[in-house]
Image 1 (cartoon, rainbow, N blue to C red):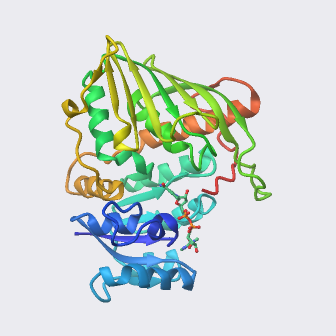
Image 2 (image 1 turned 45 degrees about the horizontal axis):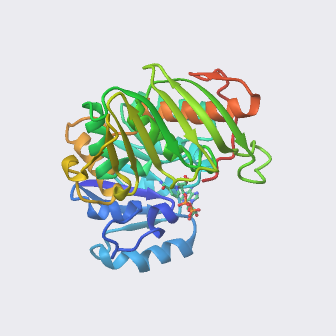
Length: 344
Ligand SMILES: NC(=O)c1ccc[n+]([C@@H]2O[C@H](COP(=O)([O-])OP(=O)(O)OC[C@H]3O[C@@H](n4cnc5c(N)ncnc54)[C@H](O)[C@@H]3O)[C@@H](O)[C@H]2O)c1
């Protein structure tokens, strides 16, 4: 069993779900359901958060199996951990990752937004590369079992050659819509070449040390493969976290909801979803932790690691850069120090 410590006991760590949820949408629930991982420690400076966690989740873990700490440093010094989940808000990621990267661990599961600037993301990536461990960035919807299956079917030619991927999701670019940026890449590939975007004011007042985080209106993403990506933002008349994948031999609509799946062939005929052999639902966190455990057992790198999360962040920051300057931005971005208050 791989030993896990969580830093930050907020919504995504533990509060979005309870132990009775069949498909928990939080780290604690996913770790608990994954047979290869065990939660051994949590850290938060808030006593209220720790006691709420203890009341909600404590009874579902063997007595005294979880150690409680007031800070990330105390937990990292006090425990022998394999995996650390970083679940604090975006502007704290860099400082917490400085501590996490000093610890003797095997993998990091980092919440989105990875960092508040590309410089921060570069620095974390270099630190992890130096240690020879992966950072997995949590674009959580990526791990929905039916989406992983559709991704693999599309790679094998389900819609012929993919030509365009249109993603639907409004909201702040790095803190929220970035989930959909990952979903576009999941079907278009993780090799972006340039972005042209329109943005609008997003998150209201910012910390004065940062620029405020814009929201997406819409963008066009050119991929080196020739695939064209489009991100439809705030005014989309479609549920968030969904994509249309347009190929030479069909059109696939897919999204976080399994029921959104709809395939039409090149004659425009709807294909029976039963032929797609879509797996049952599961907690996306359970699936992600299982991928990390499989990697530690000698398997493939987990999804949303290294070049993949870097591509997603390049697109996210290029979207902001393009929206603010009115220029098409080539990737990799030249401006890497724009510091955005990505407080999701
Ligand atoms: N994947 C998703 O779907 C999803 C959804 C919501 C939030 N998130 C991401 O998760 C992260 C956390 O968001 P949230 O809404 O859960 O936050 P939150 O505000 O609910 O909780 C954050 C917790 O971190 C604690 N904290 C801050 N600094 C700390 C430190 N140095 N050591 C220990 N604890 C510390 C705070 O006391 C707080 O309890 C953000 O990056 C956010 O974007 C992801």
